[in-house]
Amino acid sequence: MAERRGLPLRLVGTFARPVVSDAYAIPLMGEFVETALKETQKMLDGYAAQAEQSGIEVTTHAVEGDPGATLVDESRFAELAVVGKRGRNRFAGRVLGSVSAKLSAHGGCPTLVIPAKWESESAEELLAPSQEHPLGDGMAAEPLTQMEESAPREHSRREFANVAQELNFDSEVVVGVDSSSGQVVDLAAQTAQLLERPLTLVSAAPLNAKGHWYPNTVEHNLELPNLRRPYIENLQKLVLEVGEKFPALSVRWQFFDGSPAGVLSEASRTAELVVIGTRGHGGFAGLLLGSVSQAVLNRSACPVLVVPTSKVEGSRAKLRVGTTRSDA
Image (cartoon, rainbow, N blue to C red; front, side, top):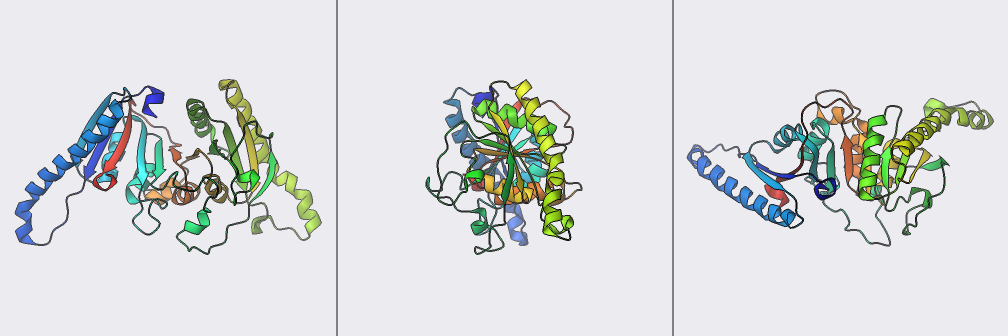
């Protein structure tokens, strides 16, 4: 990504000082920190050597401190932050860890979250996100129905045994769209053009949810076009805007009857990249991320680009990649 963007790369390695209750261990903390710094720097030097082979300008920074807080501070001066997803449980690599959650929620720039198990699936069959969901392996997939799309795809796709055609986003950049997604869509379009991939705008709403109940089926079916019209009009407007800014980019849209988190999680099974915005409010990472973005990050099978929807101030001149000792 740094090479494609022509940006310098900054590798950041952090470690936290362990909490000790034994008074005899306290004098050894200085030695521990010194050793940990040396090992972290050694790890960063190895990664830097690999990156420099591509002609990228690389700097490194090894530091003691809270990994999440350190990367959030670094992100305030970056163009893009990159971090792995390493949740500490049997779903590791698919469930958001504390470091990636904090950076995604509080980062001062867009954050690219890469699952540890990315690209490890079979080329013929992919596991559904529900099979690796924290609520249980037997959890049934939620119903998702495509209601409308702008146009058929122009590019060829791989076929997967357990992926419906309308949910097959193979080789595409997918961006989740709501009524205030302008800057998110713009960055998604820039990224799709950079990666030379088609862009698909996706909106979803549970049209058959209890909030849309009608006394009889006929009345409900008659009202469905009115329920989805605002979503369709927004998608059409955004596609036109993208087409004007990026005339060489292949862009289309799809609208689904279902939850946004469910549709985007399904999209992550086959997409090259999923792009989402932060919409939550509050000081806690889960709240600041918003329910949709948090759910997608927890269940995603492909890299997810999280775009802060609030204005970010400060100079951004480098691509930051965060590592901890456990990432080696």
